[in-house]
Length: 338
Ligand code: NAD
Ligand code: UFG
Image (cartoon, rainbow, N blue to C red):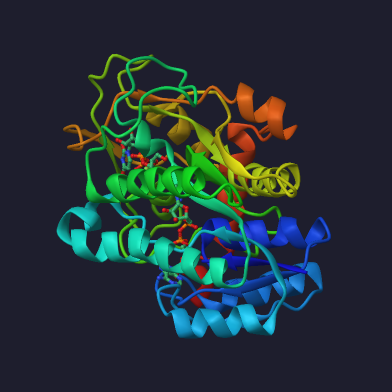
């Protein structure tokens, strides 16, 4: 029996592959490599000393996905495959709905054909929109999303709810990630954004390694501890372990389960910058710029439900997140092309 990992060559997928292999699961990866590199999986194989069956396929290609299900006995699917750039989604909404929404629907159809009913879905804290209070619990309202990417995640969540109501054989787990950062301790795998990074920590890392001149801090007039945006940064290995915990907890279940995967701690942009400066041993140039459209002041999880139900907890500190990012970035200044 194997776990099928769609999008397994990507940032979260590759780290989750390591944790699953180390926990004794067999895995199969399907990824069209539109935002990742085959090299990531080769490094996972080296680190774990295991071979990963890999299929360079698009999840929307049902014929190719059928072949994957025919070749392996799949027990469950962790569905990471999707597009994730908020900015790009506003320029190319059709592409986002097609990949993220239709892709998930087509995957579910193939799963049903093979009577594979256990799916773990990568959702996002973005489904909460601008929350009225923090920390955010799973029962807080969702749907007030501000961009097509966020809406694609919300639509899939609603779709999974409806499907599980109509057919109680389905076993869906929705994981709402907060802000994943960091890299594997080995420094061999990490986040490798294409082009100019949209996200804070990859951008700081590229300033530290000399690829970008300075960090733009988007706004210092929010109603937060130091005026800059506050987020719940979660170490990628904690996040990956959350998937293993969710998979194990719900192995024999049916129905729909929803969890926040966050640390429960809010950190500001300036706090992250300071932590990174400590990790790399340099002062990093930055400039305060206007707020980024669509950003919210503060967003962090109440992780209590996931901690209790999944017997899982994020344990890595901010320092570990920036130390590990720096190890990866300084050892691989050009990512997997180094
Ligand atoms: P990523 O881009 O590194 O990984 C996604 C992977 O999916 C890539 O390897 C890409 O090549 C693959 N892919 C995309 N479309 C595909 C398709 N149609 N068929 C096959 N493969 C396809 O992104 P990530 O950060 O690892 O994110 C994984 C998932 O988690 C995504 O669904 C993303 O929306 C979600 N998520 C990410 C974050 C974050 O901040 N990184 C936050 C919340 C949710
Ligand atoms: N920021 C800067 N400068 C930058 C980049 C970001 O100041 O160059 C600030 C932002 O304004 C924000 C904070 O850093 O206050 C974090 O921004 P990110 O872009 O790293 O992360 P977001 O919280 O905006 O969004 C991320 C993902 C989304 C996901 C969301 C919730 O990019 O896809 O977390 O999970 F939906």
